[in-house]
Length: 140
Image (cartoon, rainbow, N blue to C red; front, side, top):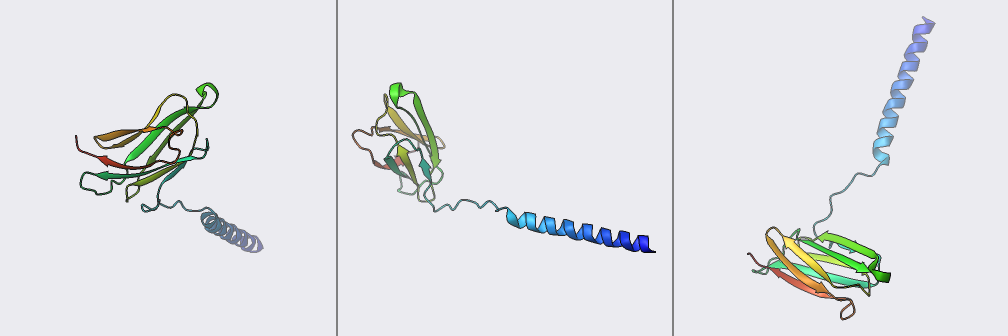
């Protein structure tokens, strides 16, 4: 009788321990949250103090959600450093790049695409280190 009571008590403790572990393990890890579509996506390049702001619209003046904006920059001594950055637009068609280098090697262009629509915009930090672009993507 004592042995079965002892086994019952050990089983009860083990079950309680498992329940506690599962409960606290679940609550101790943050649950991933979907990005808020109204927040302006920001890419931080970490290569300088230049920025670039974008508002992407269609020919009717409506904001384009999830348009892709990307750039590939070569900078630094002999252009050995590269920055390849991409970000989507939010529901207002806005996106921002921060930490772009003040001096680049060669030329660079922002590529803005959405579906079959695309547009290129030059990036020259020496002439404008903080450009604000209003981009209109037209149907082909």
